[in-house]
Length: 118
Image (cartoon, rainbow, N blue to C red; front, top):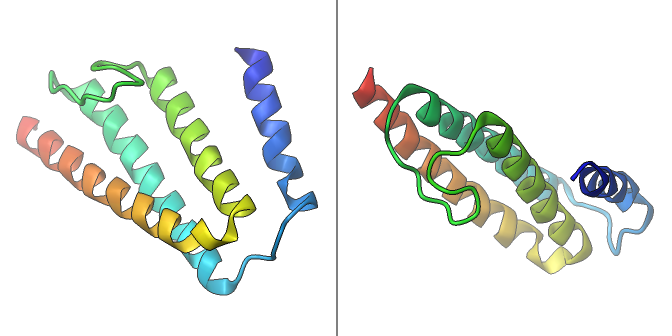
């Protein structure tokens, strides 16, 4: 597992060396929005698991993931989304805004479930 994570980090660090096209200001904004929403979703997912018995079904991380699993899952999926966006410029804005919007709605949903518990 450690070798896989190390490989992913190295690939992500070397992405800047082989870009098909530089990122525009709008695409960087989309990436910022995605990362903010993805981080909020990761935080609320972790809080949901720590504060209650609500089940958040995700077929990859299962129903009651640990904080470590949540961290790994969200780190890898963020890296993959940014990697795909980097190498396929035509997908940058649709992917990042779409995935960011999904993460925003999931974070709001988790926040509301957490609020009901407290």
